[in-house]
Image 1 (cartoon, one colour):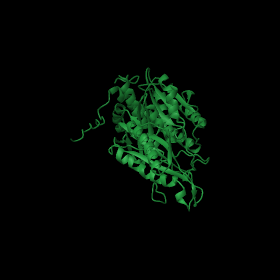
Image 2: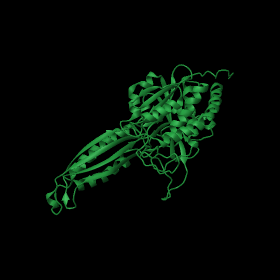
Image 3: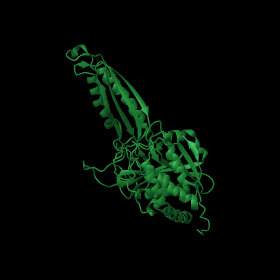
Image 4: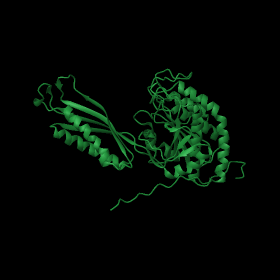
Length: 422
């Protein structure tokens, strides 16, 4: 009997927006254009003086000052929530990340960082684009209240997004939807992705410790070798994804660290493996974590050893709200972007912690291009040479504007701008 076919997702909307929202778009686009030179200067300032996860107070202070609408509310230690004018009722939130990475920059630009940290993941451009839009809304108004979410600790646990979500602050601020934009060198420049449903994977870390009985390497028959058991176990784990998960959905199980022994002629008592599990469906997550434990314990037992498995959950699946994604597409098209609705990545982002309580949308902005390195490859995220051009600040701002207008549209009827007859 043939397997039942699953329904294809509905195509992204390209319908005409309301006259009221069109009037807001024209007003905000013009205001946004005026804010971009200052936003690019802010990007340079933030890039030249980055802060690591958990130490972002200076960055948050600089961004709040650039927004120019008050000090905002402290959240998750070093984060800030800044409410911006734009109507009454439920609000639309825009998120940008405050932290840099422990990377020594190698871009060679005059505004390169020299303090052992680097905005090597585009957070400087995300923040600058958010400021440009926030200042535009503060100056000319908007169709819905806007909340700037300046989030700490995206790059390092404990997750800043999880702490913001768990604090209840977004609910207290009346947030209905939250939107973010992230540069993505796997997409061509000029492309903006708005895929409905899962776009980033859930992530879990695991450590497997195999225990045997060590001894002299020249007398293997007197030992119970945990290294041999661990090697067999690692090979067996590779079958889990290929035989347990729907191949049209996929998953990643990667063993990335092995640790054992102290000398070539000593069979150790223990051997360890560490790695990560990434899935696009929560049901696969639970199944694979249990299967990982089963395979580890039984494979070790087959070699006369025992195995213990420790897992640590990181991010849940990042799933875009389909309605919000579809409502954003017409606005992205108006900005001149080529819209993609197919890109998904087994990378992870703690923005996923907002999805369970609010409509959420992560937009990916293509930045592929630039100069290749000596190995023939262009630098990617987290590379010491990763540096999108300053034009990306305007692209981030345009993408966030598209999401903001879509979020406002989903709140209900929109009042036209003051003095507009729309």
